[in-house]
Amino acid sequence: EAGGEAEEAPAGAGDEPAAKVPRTSRLPKRKMALVVGYCGTGYMGMQMNPRAKTIEAELERAMFRAGGISARNYGFLDKVHFSRAGRTDKGVSAVAQVVALQLEMADNEEGMVRRINEHLPADITVLDCMRVTGSFNARLWCSRRRYQYLIPTWVFSASHVSAVDGETGAPFRMSEAAVGRLNAALANFVGHAWYHNYTSSKTSEDGTCQRQIFSFQASAPFVAEGGVEWIALTVLGQSFLLHQIRKMVATTVDLVRSDRASPEIASVIQQSRNKGGHMVLPLAPGLGLYLDRLFFDDYNRRHVEDFNRQAERQQAKAATETQSSEEAVVDKRRALDWDGNRWSEKLEDFKKQVVWKQILEEETKEAVFAKWIIDLRSHPIQYKLEPEERKKVTTPSGPKALPPTPPTPPPDSNSKETGESETATEAASSE
Image (spheres, rainbow, N blue to C red):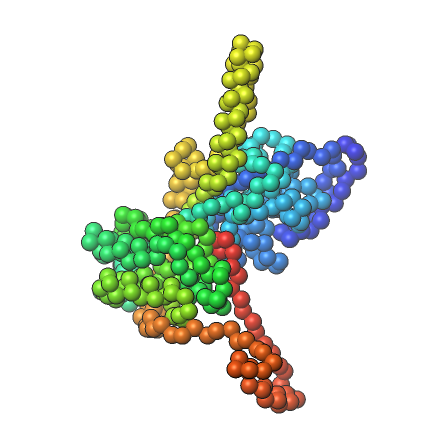
C-alpha cells in the first residue's frame, strides 16, 4: 500500500496528539537494545504511568516520531515486546538504563540513535543501540545492577550540622581514616539477607525480600565547584527493592555520624537484616541516587561469546574452502557491556556532565541534604529490634482460631466511609 492513503496515529500512553502519517510498506523489525541516560528530577519515575510525566512516555514518543514505532503500535508497548532492565523511582536518575523492543529500522544503529535523540528532551538521551536476540528480555537477562549514591561528605560528621544552620559544609574534608570507617560500615551489607525493613509494607515472610549484595564501597572524596566535598557510594547487587538503597545509605549515614563504634554499627545492620525482626529505619533523599550500570553476564556468555566462537569457526572453514577470508566474513554479535571499552568513556561523560551536574545544582538551590539532616536530628532513630507482626491465620476452630469479630456499628449518616491502601511494588531494581 505504498503511496496510498494516510492513517491516523492514535493518542497513546505518552499522550502523543493524533497525527496523519503516510501509510507505507512496513519496515523490517529488529529486536534492539537501547542504552538510555536520564535525569530523574521532574519525572514520576521510569515506568509508564497514565497522566504522569515519565521517562518511558518521553522515550516512546521520540521513538514514534523517529519512525521506530508504527502508528498502530503507539501507546501499546507490549505489541513491540518492550522490556526494561529495572524501574527507577520518582526523582532517580540513570546513566545506563537498558530497554529492549522491536524497532522498525529504516537506518543503521547510529542513525536510529541520532533520530530518536532529535525528539527527546535535553535531560533524556539514547547513548547506544544494538541488535539482540529475538527472545531477549532486558529484565530477565540482567544478572547484576550497579547503583551509585552521590552525597556531600559533611553529612557523615555531626560537627558540621548543615547549610540550614548557617554552615555551608564547604570547609569540611573527610579524612582517609573516616573513609575507611565508612567503607567498614558499608561492608556489613555484603552477602545474602532479608531486606523487609529496607522497603515498605513487607515482612520477612515474603520471600521476595531476600536480596544478594555483592559489594558496597565508597569512592575517594572529590571537591566539586563551590568548594563542597562529595563522595560516591557504589552498591552492586542482583536486584533491589523499592527504597532499599536509600534506606541502606540513610542508615549508614546516621550510624557513622553518631560516632558509634564499628562493632555496634555492624550489630545494628546485622539485626536489621535478620528474618523475623522489625526495625524502623531512615530514608535518604532520592536526589543523589542513580542507576550506574547493568550487567548481562549470562546473556553475553550464552548468546554472544558462544555465537561468535561458532561464527569464527565457520569463517575459518569457509576461508579454507574459498581461499579468501574476505568472501567468508560472518557477522558477529556485540556484547551488552559498557565497562572498560570505548562506550565507558561516553557513559562517564554523561554521568559527570549531566547527572552529577543536576544533583549538585539541585543541592545548591534547594539544600536537600541539609534539610534531610535537620529532619534526621529532629527525629532520632532508635534502631530497636521488635517482634515482627505475623500474618494472621484463620481456622474454623482450635488454638489458631481468631476471636469473634464484634459487630460493626452503623456509620454516621453525616459522614462518609473512606479507606486507603498502600503497597510497595517489588521489582528487579525498582529503586
